[in-house]
Image (cartoon, rainbow, N blue to C red; front, side, top):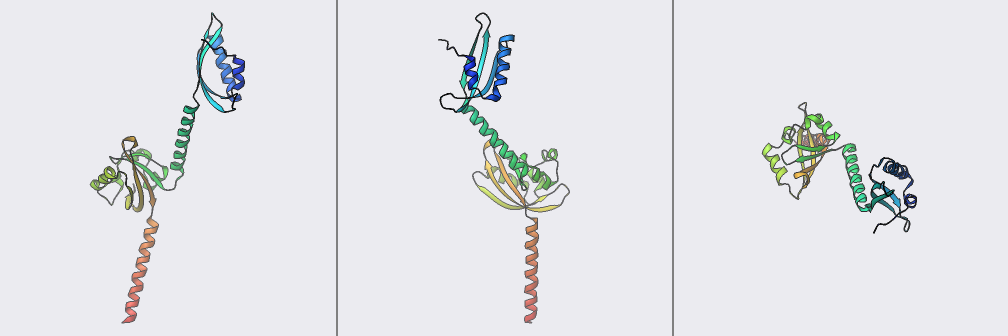
Length: 220
């Protein structure tokens, strides 16, 4: 049985920002015979809840009637919005973080990285797409790095190592890494430059060494 719906009544429920789009789609449908397939939002008459509606319609010229399907896709729209928000938050973290962030495939290549990581190494994004982790890590061998990437599993890894910049200079970093199964398996690494800390530690050791030497000399 066909359910007859008054378009004017439906339009009252549509949120104002979508009404011009719906009007234009309806004009094209009736004047040009152009079916429409669109989504818009309404305020439910009974509860006042905002819902997302998917509507498909065609026009029967002989009967001068519009036939269509209206489906509530609010849950799907909420999931889509949530995913888009998550992607936006993730992108913001990647772009604004002062620490390097890198997503490494198990073959040592980079799946994704942030601007800070590229700046740390001095490579362009295009160049980073052509090299592997053993090209910039100067402390561990390729075999050791491959072992780390392929055997991390559910473990959380914290390590200190040395990275080599494009210009050949070497600097100390601290890396916190974890494995995620998505994308064929990737290692997410958060990388911090600890060169200043290493210099301070070396200066402290030197000062302690000199102090001990002075104490020993005073006892002679």
